Image (cartoon, rainbow, N blue to C red; front, side, top):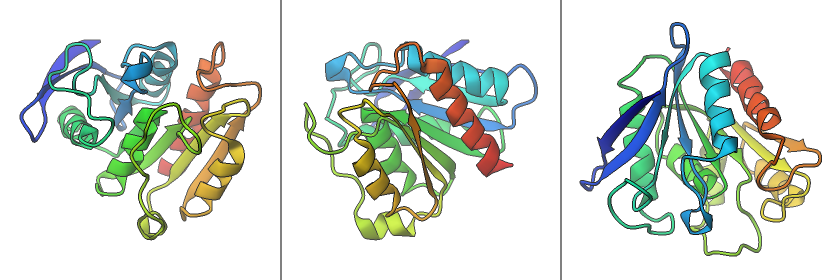
Length: 215
């Protein structure tokens, strides 16, 4: 693991960690963390599991990072408004490490940011969104892209949720998938929003999806 810092377009320094694969990299990946007002940061067992799966088993060079205002990253949390700038800077940074496709993974708040960034960045080859917040939420969330934008998206998208996740209800997830041309939905039985003791299963689901759509 290598600690790194990188700059956003509005001049903030963010902190992150790079995890290189054991062999030659097939591509790069950026992981976006959940809502900081609920304890979200790059350091969570689910994100560790995803990082390790993508690096050790799938050959990606992976960057995890803290959004602005979180722990050692400069700036202030903006509820997702400016965090897309952080995502873009993370993509810029990880692509300095290796060639090949770049993918994004987001969990909860990070899934919202990842999707909103992906529709603006044609460098993103695939997106995996875990527990994407939909419906009634405990905190305000920036609206997802409108229907016209989603229908124009050609990037493969995986929507992952537990069947017991109150923040990402399966019916709403399926409805959203119907508005994205190349979207798949994976529901993990017995999982909630935090995937306790099911982190590796969620990580393998993402890895299998990336293998399929990239190969």
